[in-house]
Length: 374
Ligand code: SAM
Ligand code: SF4
Ligand code: SF4
Image (cartoon, rainbow, N blue to C red; front, side, top):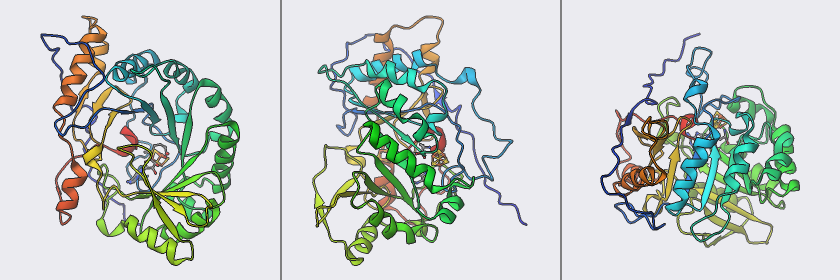
């Protein structure tokens, strides 16, 4: 057997040092970047580890027994995460999503959820506090997550066919356990559960119609995600992407007419569709064919406290060194550093990619999805 060689650069330590501005301003909750985009959404990765080896995210050839995960002391602890989250909220963040790696692998995650659930937005409301999971531990944990204050969950599921699903997660995990997780989450009040399916041509695109039929009369919202060129380990090729327009066409051709519906809010990643017969909703996330950078209001915090302003960034900003600095920086000082980073943000990777699809940025180094989360 020939071994697959995947060149990978470890970008986890590539972060710039952050000077504290000389004049400190109080936050006003109205921060804008260079393209006038606000900061509404914070995604926090709580672990870089996972019990799956999805072929498009953590291929076994790279994430094998020799792969060096972050050591425990490098990870932000719950007090540090909550402090950063509180600062982000003063800048206008309304929604926090916990991700990973597999977030349910982080020990005592419920304690972090309790701490985050106590935060209030600038207008005094509870946060929208969600989590994305592969569902493997969800049936067991759904009730304690709900009790801790989690609002909703999103579950990733790429197929209903055990053979295909196992080929994709590459750890022999069965569909039934994920389905049980989805049902339990809905039953304990973590719904409507969104079910995310990454569609990879030739691998699971034949599962589009069975997935739509299965979830059609349920309270869950199925969403199709275009396979993305995140990181460097998945060997992404454009011809493995099934455009969302094609997904919608296939569903309609299978005798299930759909009607487009409005977004819930500006900056929502999914385009929403409703079954014309009233039997539920589906979504498509067209990160490749219809970039939504123009209203991307998401910041991402890595497991060890680096701030990324784009999923396709090569470089983060090291917030952990500010938190752990001997000078004991005040919240206001860190607030101002974050403001400066956001005010300088001009990221729009996907828009640029869609303007230059042929051989776009071939040498660009990007962080891995399992490190920063989706
Ligand atoms: N482990 C959790 C899970 O799988 O839901 C959370 C982290 S995972 C990185 C977050 C989301 O990113 C999942 O829905 C996953 O399917 C998606 N994802 C990972 N790699 C992707 C890729 N190359 N293109 C599109 N989506 C991807
Ligand atoms: Fe793990 Fe999620 Fe990546 Fe799959 S997509 S390998 S479950 S982090
Ligand atoms: Fe946001 Fe970057 Fe994705 Fe554009 S490419 S939508 S800026 S994360």
